[in-house]
Length: 276
Image (cartoon, rainbow, N blue to C red):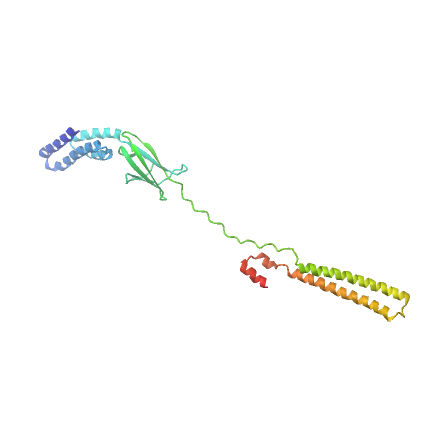
């Protein structure tokens, strides 16, 4: 290889001496690319070597230089490794629009086509359109063709579920239990009604008895007894009516208002309602 590089240098000097002045820059560039292509190939920089070989294989280059470069370019094409990189979700779905970087240098957007790469150890970085990134390292061998590499992206970030709107607890159903005062007054009314019935029955019986014995000349005491029984019945009747009326009023006023039962305005409103 050193002999080839030296021969290229000598060939460039000969062109410089013998060639016309207007051909010197073009011939020198061809010879320089001829030499650099060999150095890059020996250093494992296949892509850089290919770039130089394309220069010296141009038809405008001297025939001797161009012949070598065309042959070397064909050999390099057989040895040039390539990779096919794809982006995928964690669930296996493909990701489009992924940007690839090789060893920190942009390598374009993944489109499923093979990408030529130098043999050796490389760091690949993929970036999805939504900003997710993933990195991997690979070791590529010479002549390894279209090696498949998958950039596996983590699961997409999903928005957190919205909390359910707060629904205030519904007001407890009004209790059907009656106040104790209702039971007391109701019981007193029943007892008073019983006494009233008793006194009225006694008065009716006493009146019939007096009519059959001494009427109309009954004594003042007999007449007083009859009046007492009637008054006791009247008092007992009045107590029964008042007790029943009180029980009814308390029972009706202790039931919750339908408006308050439907609306739940919170503790403060409950205290306010309680004042009324």
